[in-house]
Image (cartoon, rainbow over all chains, first blue to last red; front, top):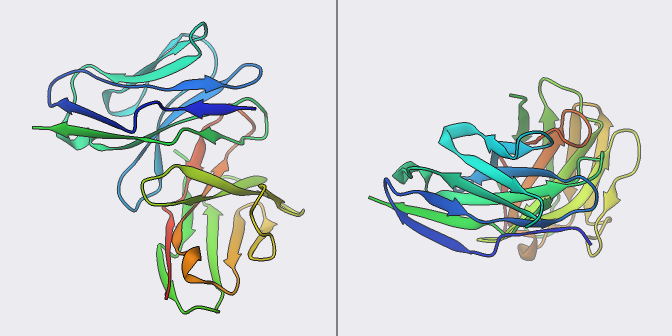
Length: 113
Length: 116
C-alpha cells in the first residue's frame, strides 16, 4: 500500500532557528513528492515538489526539501524560521499518472518570537 | 500558478437539506479533480476522484448516494451533500492537476459546511 508519513504532530522552534519537518514515503515506482502549507480555514498552498533531478529542491518562502531515496524521506527545511511560518504542513506523494496524492497527517509548526 | 476556485467558502444548512459545492479550474482544463474531507486537526481524506464525462470513483467507506459528484465539463466538478446531517459538518476541499502525475495539485480554498 502506498502511504506518506509525518511522524511529528507538532514542531516548535524559535524564530531565527533552523526548522525541519519530517516526511517519509512508501510509493511504488518513482515517487512524486510535494509539500503543502495550510493556514486556518484555508485550502492548501503549494510549497515545492520533487519529480526528478537534483535531490535538493528549493521552493516558496525560503523552504527547501531533500529527497533521500535510501531513507525514503523528503524532509522540509528552512535555515531561519519566521513567526509567519507557523501553520499546518502536509507532505504528499504519488506514483501514478492519475494525479492521486497520498497525504501525511500533517505537522503543526509553531515558531515563537 | 494555476487557480482552482471553490464556492461557497462557507455554508450553513439545516438537517435534511442538500448542499452543492462547486470546484472550478479557472485557467486550465482538468480531466480529473479530487474531493477531500478534512476533520479538525486531521489530514485530508480522499473521498472521491471526479472524472470528466464519467462516473466518479469513490474511496472505500464513502457513500456515493450521499456525496454526489458531477464532472460535467473540463473546468467544473460539483459535490452535492444530500440529506445533510450534523455529522457531515466538515471542511471540504477540491483539487485539480493541470496534467498527469508529477504536476502539482492546485487546491480550492475549501468549503466549511455546518449542518444544524
